[in-house]
Image (cartoon, rainbow, N blue to C red):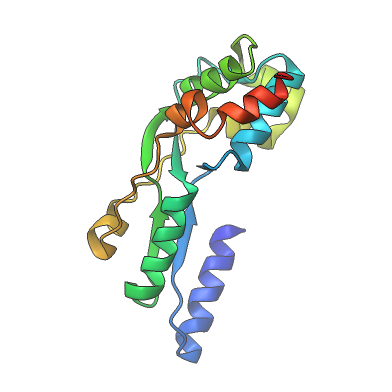
Length: 173
């Protein structure tokens, strides 16, 4: 659906002479103690650990929320109509490392399950998400717009940054 919406917006903009660009936000946009990371921390605590699928070696894309906002502003300021940018500052973070940091932050063990088990327990969409190799480079935004992401890396933010108070609250501290 996202691609259809993007294509529609870009086509309508071209027909009407409106300058439209697309900024695709990373699946793990994090920071300031909020976003999906905080939700995943609560889920990890409630579930006794977030599971990875088939070892958790699959990589995902992350971006600090402040960096994502800077990219949107740069696109508005400098982008050309019809351009597509990816707000991705880190593309080498594995689901195993990410979920491991989240699990550790709330004192629960790591878990690993097969794709078939994930499918049976969570359904097709979540099972796919847990095993997807989901990487999108922000190189174009860096080159064309001068975007320089500088937010705290996601694993550091979980272990010693803005998510420490979230973990403390979940642990009743």
